Image (cartoon, rainbow, N blue to C red; front, side):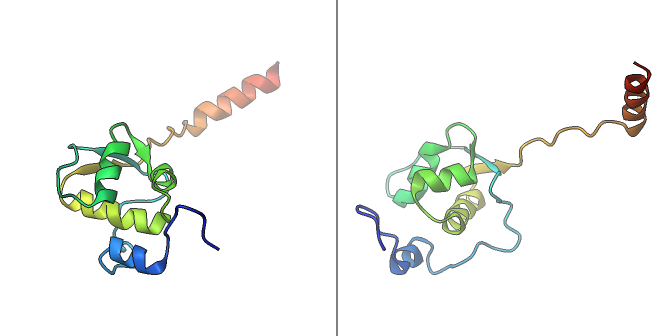
Length: 115
């Protein structure tokens, strides 16, 4: 069942990605990868690529971008890979929390038990 105003037919998605159905296996994108535009859209650019560049003026997660574009995440990843290959966007994973030293955790636990 299709929603009004949304054309997500397989033919349209096939056309958007130039026939590619899945991102490359070495794609750096997952759901939480932060994407940032490195340039502004230029005339003649595919409309979805231009929309990505507008949405990613500030760091934006891939999953948020897919929701904004109203496209499947897999299609969004393919479009992002195109922009990454041309240097129009950069991608990075959110910083992981530092894992505390197990010895420090042990000392804290001992201290709590002594209370």
